[in-house]
Amino acid sequence: MLVSAKEMLQKAKAGHYAVGQFNINNLEWTKAILEVAQEKKSPVILGVSEGAGKYMGGYTTVVGMVNGLINELNITVPVALHLDHGSYDACYKCIKAGFSSVMFDGSHLPFDENLAKTTELVNVTNQLGLSLEAEVGSIGGEEDGVIGQGECADPMECKTIADLGVSMLAAGIGNIHGKYPENWAGLSFETLDAIQAQTGDMPLVLHGGTGIPADQVKKAINLGVAKVNVNTECQLAFAAEVRKYIEAGKDLEGKGFDPRKLLAPGTAGIKATVIEKMELFGSIGKAE
Ligand SMILES: [Zn+2]
Image (cartoon, rainbow, N blue to C red; front, side, top):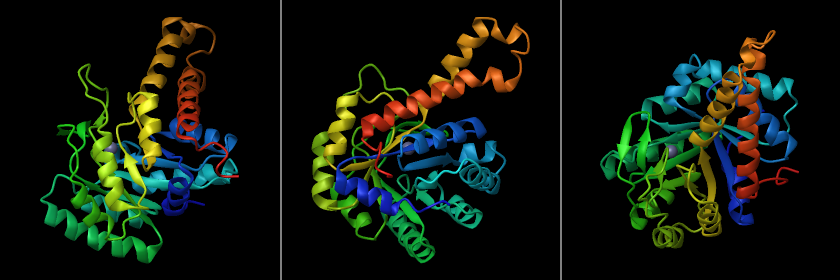
């Protein structure tokens, strides 16, 4: 059964570790992440962007697939199904479809509008026992066509949004989505410290987890980050492993063209990445 991300993130914040949000793209992704979470006894958040939701055939298809896998694979660790960077409309669609968690990304809106829409969604999600992630300021890089500047959020704006009663808060601390440029300055721990001081127990979310050096991720977790989003890294691992398989000509040997064989190395690549991240975040064994 899907659960809200609220409790798992409050536990993580109190325990000074983070829960990974791993974005899913299809059946292979979802199965790989769920199997690793179960094997490693780790809570997990499955992220779905609006683009990925559309790709997989719509939100109800995603909910059906995830619930089916949890049931058939006997997944007993806490699993949240979370809309990543949702618009106001997408939040309602996902709530209706059966997601257990949504992110409303109003960071590109004027602050007052972000505040008003987040307030409304806090009320709706609280009534339904779902978790809500809000975002302040802009996080750099590109996600489904939205480009930002790698900005840092205003700690007082973070406090205002956190005080609404959201379950988790994403705030820019110099992080970027996708691959990091050579000249990237690193995370702004000064900003994170200031946000943490203003928001207290609120689980903070670090987006753009791919390419941030491990020591910086660990430091961010020590300073109050309780959820780290991982997307690109699993995609790179999947592509690299499938490339190796094809370049070795294995798809031309026997029934090597069978998708169950062709995609198997990619799935193994995702699993290895997820294990590595769960070790880094410290979530292994926390679902026991
Ligand atoms: Zn993000």
